[in-house]
Length: 259
Image (cartoon, rainbow, N blue to C red; front, side, top):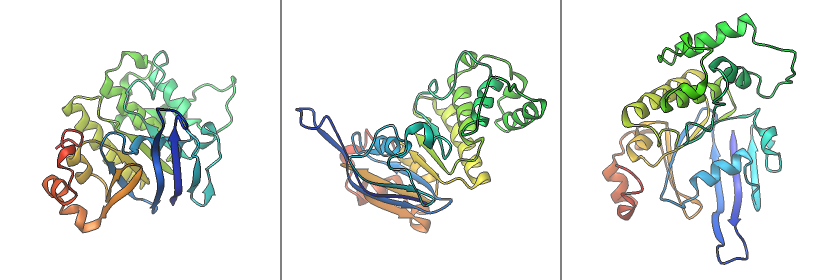
């Protein structure tokens, strides 16, 4: 479903600040995989998502989604295939627009858009139904400006927007890291429900090892721009944080990979 083959990415090449972020990365996802990604700072986790999304071009390698070569496709043209939620709750929404207007933008992603089309009653009904599934009461505040929402509400809305058109691939870049623990748990629960309901192929970057073990059917660990651990199925279900720390000798990363 997703194939990353021989990816390389170096930042600031030829300078004293040269940094090889991705070093011959190979990764293949099957349809419906929910993969959590862990690794220390600088392991290449977010850079991998940025390469897939087209934020950065790879120096070498191949990115293929559903058999379609995305490697040289501009970022804006990949939007029709991808949904993404960022770490910063403010990045995924337009603060000065209403909730229903933000949803309308997401609903029209990848489609022709013009000035002549407003939000239809049928669309409003759809948005209300989708918002109600979040359990946050946002369905009764559809005209409210998004900038008035809390961080958790905005992140839940961003998650809904990212999955409204059922993307081929959902990218979650530490999307609960900026939230308080209670709100983070709520957003993760919503994430699991949406991914399961729509059978979305998902890559979720996290620093929280418990979350990495608890969610998804597959866990990969990155180090120095490569996949060094790939665990799935029953082995993942039976894994504990202590097992992960001891088995893969990452005791020194305990502060980076939260227990």
